[in-house]
Image 1 (cartoon, rainbow, N blue to C red):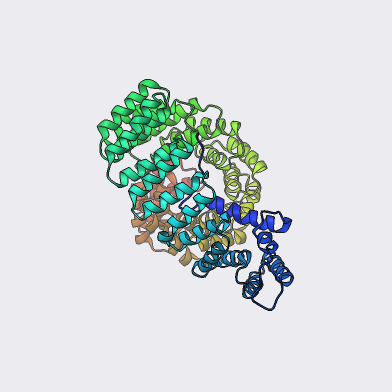
Image 2 (image 1 turned 120 degrees about the vertical axis):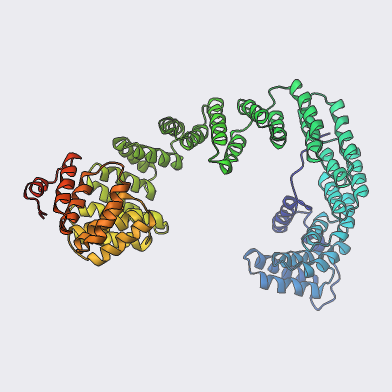
Amino acid sequence: MRYKRLKYSLRSSACIYYYGVAFCLLSFVSTPQSPVLAQTSASPKSTGSLDSTEIRQLFFSALREKTVENLKHASELFERVIQADPRNDASLYELANLKKIQNDYANAQPLLERAVAVKPNNEWYWSALADSYEKSNNIGKLENVFNQLIRINPNKPEYYFDKANALVILKRYDDALAVYDQLEQIAGPSDDILGSRQKVYLKQGKIDKAAADIEKAIAENPGQIRYYLLLSEIYNSNGLTDKAVKVLLQAEKLDAGNGQVHLALADIYRDKKSNDASFKELTQAFAIPDISIDQKIRILTGYYPKFPDPNAKASALELSRILSITHSKDSKAFAIYGDMLLTNDKLKEAKEAYKTSIALDGQIYAVQEQLLRIELSQNDLDGAIKDGENTLSLFPNQAWANYLVGVAYAQKKDFNKALGYVKNATSLELQDKELLSLSFSLLGDCYHDLKNNKSSDEAYDKALANNPDNAYTLNNYAYYLSLRNEQLDKAAQMSARSTQLQPNTSSFEDTYAWILFMQKKYSDAKLWMEKALAHDKENSGVKYEHYGDILFYLGKTDDAVDNWKKAKGYGDKSPILDRKINEKKYVE
């Protein structure tokens, strides 16, 4: 017969936990199988001054203390029982468990050894002792424990596996193989036995025996693709890649729609640097619905470390496209397709993929945030507001969503609405320094446009407190101070810092030049304005006007007028620009 075995390390923690819970429950419902009543019903002779009734009462008092987690008192009571009755196996067992809870395996072991000596047929006691030996790495004593457990319950496969595992750790490989043979005679062949046996063969370096065992399974079950996969894995992991490919190609002929075969081939071809062949196998695997979408997504995310290599990006994009077709009803497929489109700078297509993902499942916040970011980058302010407010109806406490909607409103010049959303962002997020700096900076911009200079300055100060190197905040704050002709030294320091953080940024250099001009440092101002003009790709009329202003104060009136005329030609609509040109002098 076949059976399915739970995964475990050396001992099955599930079994031990089950025994522990079962014991506690059985103790209180007083079933005949309970080790507590098995001991007390036997009316053992006590060696202390307590009679059997008093011992029984003391035992149940200890159990009650254990139940309310008063472990110290419970331990003391169990110890009193053992002092009065050294052969009280239930108390030995319970006290040992309490010590195990405290990771005191050294003192738990002798208690359990005494318990099994009193009741050698108690499966729970032996299981607890096995666990204790394993946790304290006392592997040498495990063989006898599992022998006892097999004697008590010979039809439980886990005990055979546990015994074999202990023997493997002790490098007694042939003895471990003998245990698997014994189990196979009792329970019949199984994949668990087959797989475990292969691991032993491979530890012995007997690749031929491992392969022969699986080849026998293939001969007996030629249609079972899992055996081909197992055989190919053995060959591939031991450097026999050609044999591994041959086995997988045989499997492919039997079942071309088996995705695991294609994935295994893709792995081998990748290791052989046959990238085209590997990618071909992946595309076939991704088109097979039976392979879980989560496994495919794990493969896709494996491409991330290879970015920004264009070939890796293109391959990941194509696989994600296939994924969206194969799993067309799963929002995750379109979410990662959107991610790959975004990575390949296909913003329009990414936007549609994210919208499809949201339509399939609107409960994934990260996808909605990505959509908002794309809409803002495309200056789709109405779309960002609509989708952002819908996002916030589902996720009102998401600080980034509040900030992004605030950005959209600010760009639409609706500063009062922007303030509401951005204030929400600052109240919802207290740890994300980046978001806090951006949010307070945006508050500063909004307050400035609303002519609330005091609140604007306070917001900028908070932005810089969260991120002293926020270049845009440094630039804006400095520029607005200079427009008011206030705190020019502070403005100059902030502006200079922004040019260090983002050198060759024309707008930052223009701000710094303007502040130097306000400080009457005209030579320095000229130097920085010339940098700004050199890095200006848009031929800003305002910059040429500023340059003319500087030149005028350096006594170069004709050059100043020429630059004022250039400013007008480039679209500068300053109301005093014509006066500067006509009067050939600086006008405030």
